[in-house]
Length: 388
Ligand SMILES: Cc1ncc(COP(=O)(O)O)c(C=O)c1O
Figure 1 (spheres, helix red, strand yellow):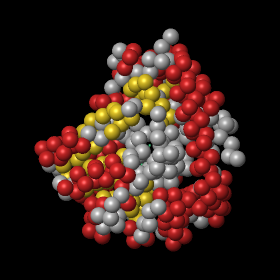
Figure 2 (cartoon, protein in one colour):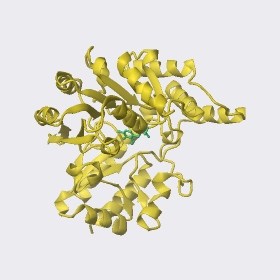
Figure 3 (cartoon, helix red, strand yellow):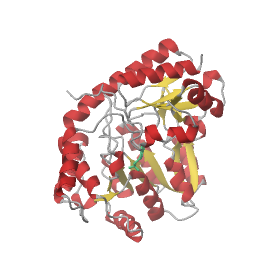
Figure 4 (cartoon, protein in one colour):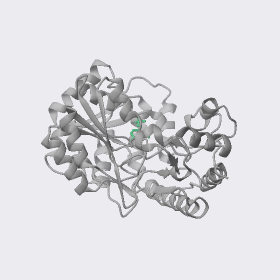
């Protein structure tokens, strides 16, 4: 049984989650439940593999080994029923850098790029920083979870010269695990208007039964022609600092365009720890991830029970995947700045401000539950105290 209850002191370890908030907010003793990494140690075989690499003592240039391709292919097949071909697999130092490369490779300045609202903030940033036209389609809420607004999307695709859609599958911050049927309808809409789909699947392994993850490319035999998949072992296995991600591109023309931009920027080599950590994670991760999902489910239940009994004004979106919970604080009638102020300076707890995920995120917050239960309960008490 993996031990997820241990509380580690991450302060003064130069980690973004715990150490950057003092500078940001000017306060000591803030409790961080924000950025998406976990307060759990990585799986021991992964740490062993990394140590073994250090023990070699010489850390020269290093290509991706065949065994890494095999580990990725095996993981994708056994966990997601996706037979990714070896030639389709590319590497990069992160999913966000790959998003930027994709925008540069497949669109030109001024082209429309569609994203959902709300969605993971770097989606908007990579579009805007590359001088493409950002188009946001508001997600709708039905039966307490997000659904896509396909009618609005179709109108936007036509009106805004949309060439690319960046999909978050599963969805951050809402935790939606898009169903195969939803992805099929969405994909057919994109195909109808020649819109390429970049499917960010970094949360693909963090899925709670009975929900089932479907890789976009796998939904229909034709979808691989107009889509690329971005994923990584780093989110699943809490290895964000080793900076490695994969890009799966089955269509050779799309692959060439991506590689051309990667090579223009000399971005096609990954650090050795990224390769080693990813391979070890996929080779040894099945039991660890199953146990993690049990622990995260308990934490999600804890949040839901606490909010329902102690802060019933807050609406919760139960995640179907990811370790993130989307909370609606609109009942308090506070501005986004007031909401943040109150949580940070009164409650001494840091969540991600919903407004950073897009205009629809106003008066919302994103809570990260990937921490020991003790830390989570302390965070929940602090959230409650913010409103007393
Ligand atoms: C949807 C999504 N994509 C990408 C990332 C970050 O990926 P990377 O660290 O590989 O750039 C995150 C991190 O939380 C995320 O939620």
